Length: 85
Image (cartoon, rainbow, N blue to C red):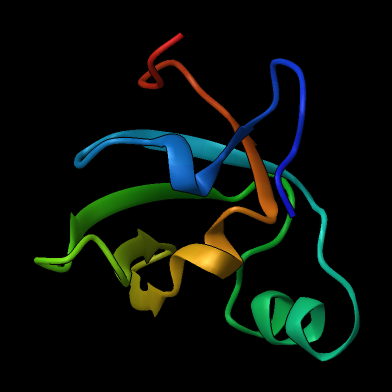
């Protein structure tokens, strides 16, 4: 689901950028899975790297490393200093 306006998602950040999760735009089992992985509001997340074809991405948060598909990353709204405007 593409988000409109000035909303930034995990899909928009570059390698090495650190951002804070603001909210989720997913629902159901996907939302619960993301929350179980620790992707909750106010958590700091760093994009470690992208796979060669740009999907999936590796994230670091709270000392853990997780891999996330781009189609799931686009549902997580973020804010942060390291993001391009």
